[in-house]
Length: 301
Length: 272
Image (cartoon, rainbow over the protein chains, first blue to last red):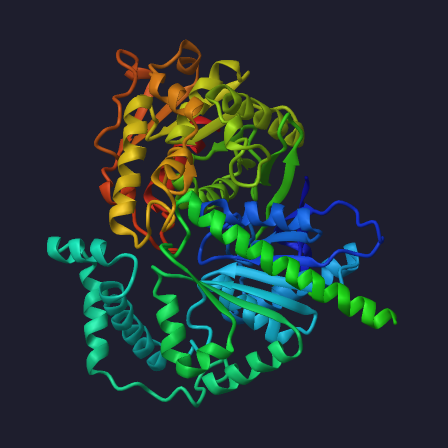
């Protein structure tokens, strides 16, 4: 496995680590897989999971790129106060341009955990070169999360649903029950969940912030899927992100490809959880490669 | 390529070695001091939580005139290698390799080394082989490997009790599950490393005494500075038990500004 470090993106200032594929026999440029930061974590991802996945994707034929957006990991912070929700997307697109110029990459996939997943989906919405998006425990990506009142209300409702689900129908029932009996729980989160009971849910139909409404996002998602973009949600059973997904999409959830991994937490901490995630990512990557390959052949004919 | 306003940036690169080591060099912003600084990360979950703090420390040191190199240990972060390659000796060699790479990229100059937890231990173990070492900062050094290992195991039990996760895959036979081996907070604990940690008792070394040393302790189990040699050492105690509590959150990075500023002011005075 050959790995290199690169300064890329706007002003060639962002740090990325590349896992290179073996040279393709066809001589075609490889598709690139872009890993986007998970929260404040640097480009190795939670428990170094991005490193493992990137090396596995390179083995499959991707140029795998672990990127630090501005202000995260090894990359410098911006000094123009641009909102990260937007600047990270424009930076990712600039990195794609750079990868196209340096390595000839024409198609891309994006993936990430948590906020990295949310950014991956938004990148797919913005740029038609993105042909696949693997979203691992994304949350707040199906509404305009810059609309503060709506976000606050959804968080409280998500938490309420989360705790009820964990207690009533999950692999963790016994554990949660023991925690409740011991009084071993996060009182701040519980308070937030209880407050959610008394709040009316603001409309998700309009947008007051930077991003579109839920209906518009669902429409965009349908268009992507119809256009052959391989968008896959992966959720951990122990994470509240799946509650957000079901809460917001309701009956429409079945239209959106998603996998729920039993017995797993938000960051896939135990090693066996990451083995499961690795198989899911590998399957998704091979599916995407097959689609890209058939697209090329179709174009050649 | 479009331009954007940015703070000063780093130079990422791979250091040629038996295993390619990932390093990130950030250069001094002001009139350069003669001393360059090598930062030694902690291991495992602590590496993840303190990466941002190390990046901030590098920036502060750059502002004070130091050029700084951070690097990942063999088999950790972006560096090549597997858990089977993890040994204390391998990692000690990594520190020497990184120090050589730092000197090569910045021209020969005196060196200061800052290490946190196991990174501090490895820095101290490498110190006797580092020529012209001027200063050593040992931040919550792991001096008793067996106690450290006990703590790693305890943290794993805490995580399993509190996080919404199962210890083993649903439906997997227990025998197979146990065959996976030991782990702590998402990182494997290979038997060879466990044996080495179990035997680790760091009590200082004469070469370390030649350098000025700053001991930073934030934990109640911190070892006392080297007995009888405290005159050569400065100490900074800042009890911070909350810093070491396991929490599951993506935003659980730790940036203890007071400690970082103390390190910078001490190094500025120790390495004019």
